[in-house]
Length: 318
Image 1 (tube, rainbow, N blue to C red):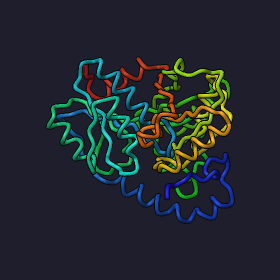
Image 2: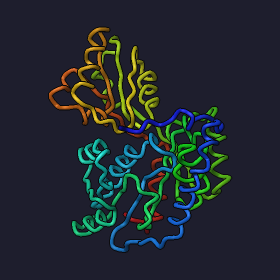
Image 3: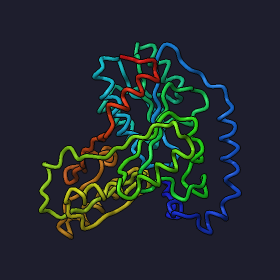
């Protein structure tokens, strides 16, 4: 059964359940201490970037990886994206393979070895900040401003892989969908309090294929991603009339009966169906005819500054 994130993880303050689970946080604290004291390998014959998170799920890692790939591909580097193989994350593997050069294996050291063998000069990892074996040349942490750090507690009391103090060891933060009028100051202050030197960048999603849809239609939407709310919000922001939403757990593996049930609900209410690209690639091909998906691009507001920072950190690649 797929894991569904508990709602109390994203409360602004810890709930009673969070406090009751707090003794189990000790396991993650010990694990983080061990990881932080491990000797990690830095590779001299290839440069590495890791785009990861310390908040579980829905922070925009994969779109950020694709954006960085597009940026550095234009510098004429031989660049590839990379991801450790997880059988329950094939959706992200398919998207990365469709939109970039892509390497995967059952551990990240093997991925790097493959990349070196194929003469790649730059490797951009989707996830892996907590990997105990690799010292990446540039480490970028993703957040979604809507959830930020939730209740701020470690798993299982909250959604954090590491505490906010871990930002001391990373190079930059990229925040998705920040509301500059209300959320920027609070989030920026929290980050700068931990690491005054860390660079902060802002990003947002843009729908690439909006003109493929009739906005006079009414829509049923469904998704099984880390942050379902972000999918609904971008549709509403772009004037899609969302009548019904069905939410599945992250990385949900759709079966035929799941899709047929969605189609039946939509037909009964005369609704068009929209999902995310990550969900669409997991739907059996013979059932995709009545389902469409939005194609999104990540826009980084300070793209030039981020690019220059990465170049400087990885020895001014050009």
